[in-house]
Length: 180
Length: 456
Image (tube, rainbow over the protein chains, first blue to last red):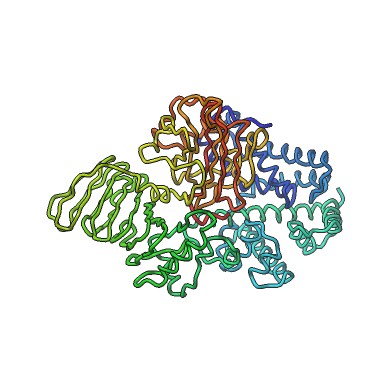
């Protein structure tokens, strides 16, 4: 069982960990897909980072160090899942491929998140509600469809279309246009 | 690695569907085959999934930052107890509420948990039919000039400045500004946290000006007014009796029997104010052997002794915790020794919390003959988002979450042990604690979202 950290994290560490959360979450989810595994990997990563806080040199880049820890924890999660014979969204060999691919884009995840913030200003309240219910509160498609007064298929199409539009908006912004 | 052609739209459909419980084994195999076979597919999937994570982060953060409960059709469809209070608001009333100065953040019209819904309906019904009163709804805002009236129960109003006003009915009070109120009837606790000063409460006899404090006021039917200062100090400015401003400090109490009579000292007694004192901290109800620490005890958990009850110490409010802050539990459930109490969980997103220390301290060793198991249930008006069970975790968080200059005494066995149980209800509002205290002092720290509309 994990034990608490022996050192109180510095303010710089806490700020760096907070600033890296979106990138760490993105890395874990990109490596393991939707599902509990990504959450577990992120949690394990945060705890290990917290416990090892005194090993981080504030003069070095935090995210690189954090991602090296996250890779290890992602692989730890799939090792445990294989041992317990639990099904994951991605097969274990695919996870290893995805970890390599995700490592390539870690540096731009934060930029993408910033671009996304701007693109989300274009969402209507109703669309934001639907996305929030699905992505933040983890409600089922059926529940969100009922709350929005839509059929399940119609809601799926709507959410996927919103996702695509946001993705396109992010790409346009990253391409340098800055125009949503 | 070979790179097979793939359909972009189909890949996105499968990735989207993979978040659903209905994702089939056939779809899973199709998705995995696509990712194995194409580097381009993996690149697209990484972008898709990392954007999903950023989307969840961004939406979650914007909800947590919101101070007002917005109209939410999804939440409205839930049968949560707060929605028992809902009744139709005209559109213009809602728009006015959105710009309002304060938030009504809790109604406490019950005698016990089980009688809660009926009592609430009584309170709301009265207000609904009273003259010059606004429609009341948990989370709705008020604007200056709005009156709030009710006969039974308690209400808590949170001003934009952070001032908390908890009132017990029968009560009539009016929102005057974002830092002031008028009260003509009722018993209230007013708390002005942090560096805010200058909150003004007008009563028929006195204008009470906060100088950084918490205080109680009781206005009787005939206008007679009593004031007791719990922490800090206030200034009394007689409205008609002509005497100069009077400074009143913690532990002092006065009474004014009429508009033309100067205040006279009375014995300081907080007992009548304890229900609103409790409400002002968002503790909606308590059952069992448990109570909220009195004002004089609040900053001294190490010295507060009660052999018969668990004590709840409200600590710092509106503390910003970073994501990654580690606690022992964040989810509803039952926590018991050893596994349930030893786990560590990192917060997944930044949070603003109010902290509470729950303690049993009999002051001396409990003998085998004396009672040694104490249980209590407390219900908050906001969700519990974190729990700290272990001594080291408590020690490490004292500086951040304990009151400034809090006296934790020489308690050396903090946290809880093998015989203790803690459980958090599914809706995160109700915490049940059962401490077996044969061996010294038991303590846990409870973190509650500061924002009533926190996304839980």
